[in-house]
Length: 337
Image (cartoon, rainbow, N blue to C red; front, side, top):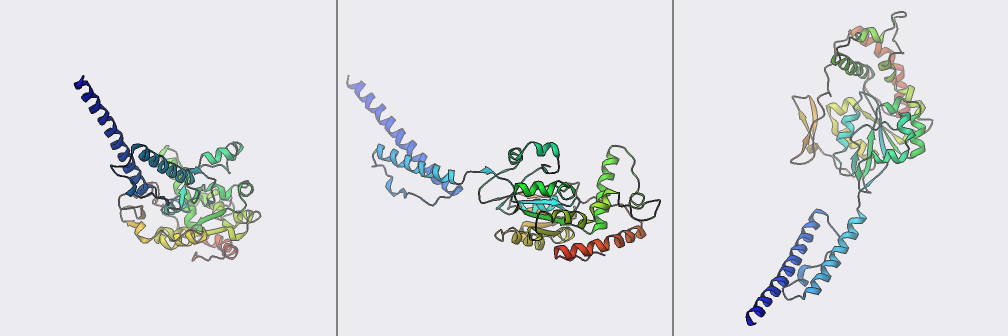
């Protein structure tokens, strides 16, 4: 009988000891969680000791867990509609701009082009479908997406206006002739990948009947920025647009990113330490932290074909009056020929 009582006491002490140890380990876990997710209310560990009754310890655990749960719920991640959209232009540097802005901790990017506003079938699915395509974010963060087709698609400005009339619009542009050649180069690569033939750039940009610039060629039309911007201005004031210099973003990205930070009313964050030049790629790559770096996809920075200098000059003369009007509307002047 005495032996069974001793065994019972040992088992009882073992159970109580295990519970106390487990409780302390749980508290230690919560302490570590505070480094991952800081909270403003913290209970001092001084009240926990080996002499604290188990029920008191459990009560303090439950109280601290409740505080953590309430704090976590306040910072619950959600899917938000964009408060800024990169609307174009195609081959202007929209992907580079989006990736570089994602260096900022207050910016969350949509990883894929959603094509909600320029695609009738997607638009018919409704705003909730669009929201579901957005990434999770904290309430204080800005969600940004990009689709270059938005800029040139007639229905898009009104559709975006109906979603959010105060949205910030980012338009990244390059020197028009360079952009047209880049546009051609991307299509040419796709044709060659499928073993298809494609006309030379010179044959597409010049109308053989008139010997003038062929405005029916999409790569030319897209480079007439005022043609599309004037339609956007029917719905949004010019103050809601920020024009980004795509050529400068390639050569010296930081000044352009600082201007965007200011336009979006973001705290100044992105610095030169977040960007480093990759001589092999010929582009700036991104440094998120000491561990994670990222360069843009290999499809970026394609080598352009040689173009007849006289054709380039003809295009530059054609674009010149449109460029002057673009400077006047946006208030930003570029050194385009």
